Length: 217
Image 1 (cartoon, one colour):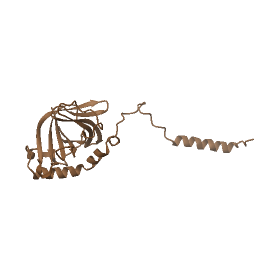
Image 2 (cartoon, rainbow, N blue to C red; image 1 turned 90 degrees about the vertical axis):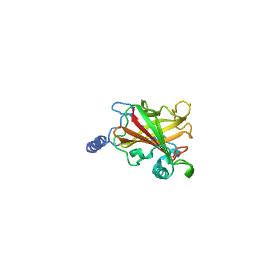
Image 3 (cartoon, helix red, strand yellow; image 1 turned 180 degrees about the vertical axis):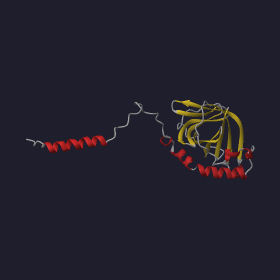
Image 4 (spheres, rainbow, N blue to C red; image 1 turned 180 degrees about the horizontal axis):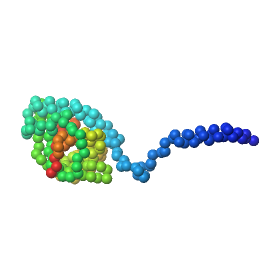
């Protein structure tokens, strides 16, 4: 037959139980429940190993590409680009407004070494920042090379783009990871009052660093 607890022992046990309950925080609300905010995905859980390596070597891409651009012949006016080709030009408040943009691509460095152009400054094309259920999306609308991808928050000075490239008359790229030879990782930075750039390290072809300048249309 079990022994009954004496009143003093029972009271002490109840007091300990109440104290334990009071000191244990309530569980967080389930995703999507009352008081839950939007759940943002982390790009690090999506990026491929190849693109993670490209991103982690972005400083090396800047260094090599600028060295080649300043030493080798090129196409366009490199000297007029200002902060666009300054690695340290990023400013706070990176998130771009949704809407249409004018954009141009600048290719720095050459994968062909001394035999290639050190830089190429292209003309202006059409781009757009769209709001989607998964977050902001960048789309280059015109031109023979049209990158597109989702923008992931990183900090106040940069967002990370994971996207893919469509070429020539192909339909717009709308998936990441389906074709590794078309995947790209990029960093979005604000470099002026109404001026942004996408920095694409180690592109699949031609250059060692691509920049896409964006200004509202």
